[in-house]
Length: 231
Length: 227
Image 1: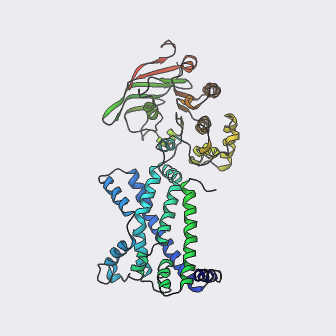
Image 2: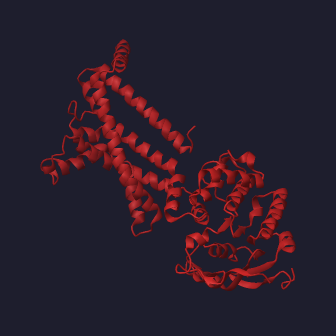
Image 3: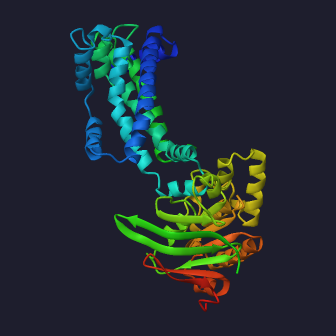
């Protein structure tokens, strides 16, 4: 018990004194997660809307694939991307393995199905009466689209926050594609795994507390977006 | 006989390969209380959607002031903006009552100051000033309907399409809106009302179209039809 209390004291000390190594790891994680979420949002949001609003052959099959990909293990995805970007892979000459770009590609692929599926649900949940009301009020095509986005905004933002939550806490993709290089591709989760193994329990604990705090904030935001209001 | 403001000829509408509307001719008279009546499922709301240009997926011809409504003759969006619809089950957008009433004006890019003034005066006219800051998802059925009526009237429409508004209104409100509709007609607005309310039909109808099974069974003035 004493051991844990000592580790916790050390962890809080690292956080309060803004330890440079902790700052770098947290900064790298936030940078990677925000970038991945942004790219996945730009690609996934329009696809989610299109899947809901446009009828096409194979739509049911695509939705089933999407739902399956929601629970894709991060190490499996990491392995898949690794096979493409490793030196012997077809994208090997681009030199993306063990770089930030490599991690971002993996993370984008990880959360793309999540964002597409949750945006699809958010658009699907908008009452059909909204469309005829918008037309009858004199909305142009662009205005109708904006109204649709506005009506689905809580669901869409919830989707993006969920995607961010998934990447900030994942370890498989970052470890396999980033290589856990200190000061470069070391993220909160990979650092926790490695530093704890090395016996730096306080350091791992400090990062764990920060990750838990970020996770709490994310869940707090998701809860209010899902309930449809921010107070 | 008043002028015809809107006319529909040879309207055919299908759902799942089955004709739901097969209408030879319907006339809407200017500055009058036009009624569209008929049993449930007779195609009243479908016809209202077509006449109000909300639904453009049909075969046939619509004439506005004797001119065929085509892209060559009209800017369809601007023409649609001369009409307003009050739905049986209104949809209110997320936000406050004020933002909902203001929406049609915002869509027309009207200045904020003017929007504010018109929202207040319309809310005053409908006696819902106390609701302006209330969120749309906190309203009762009657309050929602009143908000949707205010939203439809704020643009000063030339034709007001009304689809059975009484369902969510209490007796007092129904009486109030009957009076309001009569005042609007005196101001020159044309109203097309779908209703089952015999009191409204007997007392206010000037022109009546009776639909049955997607077809016009009878149409004419209240005197012709002996209402």
